[in-house]
Length: 313
Length: 321
Image (tube, rainbow over all chains, first blue to last red; front, side):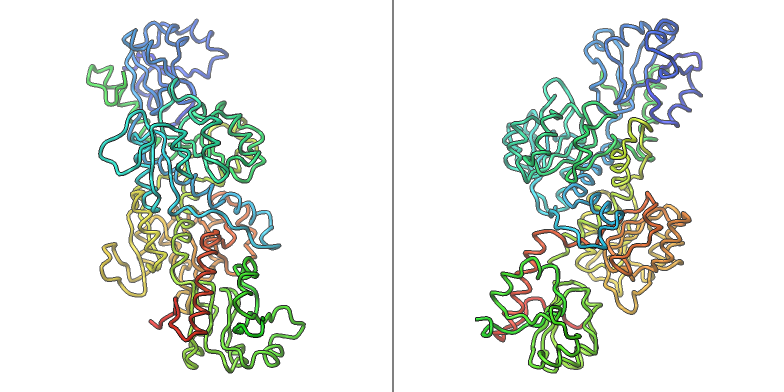
């Protein structure tokens, strides 16, 4: 397989990069001054693209790589891949479900605790020497608070299970009601937001879920409410979120994703009632290796004409 | 009519007292020792001879000397769950009852313990600092953390708080074992009679026990070496359960993987070396600092005092074990 050209879209994982280099003819997208330069030189050599939540395979890339047979994404999210176009052209698509479910769900809970109990802020309080001048303030209890989850798929269900360990009543919204759960279903996000204190975004990003957290939802959540986003930045109307936080119309936010990563709205950097993370949802040594192995396994299966491990298309 | 209200001595005001002083003062007449220019001993000798009840916090020592100045004392109400600040043998000798915060804090303490563990493993505070320092566009992807699921967590002290911690971490797929003075009946988690053995078989230790003569500096160099270079220590008990100097050295030299600390040997002083470390999360003894805990605490303290003054059973007496 060493002659098969594989394009790696960004430096997403050293182990993955190393293994791809051993098994295939690896092209690093960021080694080239521009996308056009790369396509001009190598478009006919690429039979597989390994994409990430940062750079996937959009229409331009698909059109520019006529020999592409498979996109293997180092993510579970598919929002950066033009799935319609891939289907049309018979291009296979794989992602990395299940292996990252626990880490992302863990991070949602870590964000809830850090946001409600002001863990990062109190760490700053100690490091600045302020504790010597007086006690920290009262924060907000987590146990027993109502948690509303948007999207009760693998990750949403894992979040619900963890929150139940804290005796939180769970409610959710998704495209359809899920049988077999004890959680309360709300047919709209606004209704969900009106009936919970902590609202967690755990659904896929599609044209329908873009800006699913908007002004109406934020107002329904209210000044004691908290938004937790471990989905995609575009799930949230970011300027609306920022102004609600700055004006105190929303109680707080724990955010792992942003509309225009790695840029974070400056107003958020000045706020104490937010916790900001640089898209680390699946960011553990253990899980990134499992994700890499899944990418490698899918590519190998494809080129050996075996069934794909985790096909989407 | 403050004089007709039952009299309660306060040496130094607990945080809940300061916060809810108006409400408290409607029910009891407080002798405010800290407001007097007299040294404590003189104040007590002059004013406290007939005092039957004391309200104190966990960092106000009720020493043998203080007890000797309170000949009429029958009840100590402490706003803490911990009792390490009270001369217990002297209280036993004089049959002085003690009421504590009991189990009302267990949820909040357990929540913070889990929050601190997650922060250390997933580098939450460090990554938040990274973003606030403007480093994400410059340095690119952040360092990888460590997965919580599947980690072996050793709980030191499986009382009310320890059990709540265990229950929460089980939902994350952690494997729980514990060390306690005695093995607990009806608990299926593996028991280690020796904290060093617990450490050797754990990826993380969570300190949830009381501070006593036996547990002082129980987490020492030996235990930390047994825990190992990837190991994490979370302390929501009392600072002195850990040999703090050793802990700092182990962290600085990379002998253990990280720590989340809500308590310290000499609060509010925190060893400066810790400020330079990214694998340490520091918290200013706030495990119970939520409005719910404070409100519950107020109800409990008032309830205990009212019960005492009307000769009814205390709500949360500390019983000899």
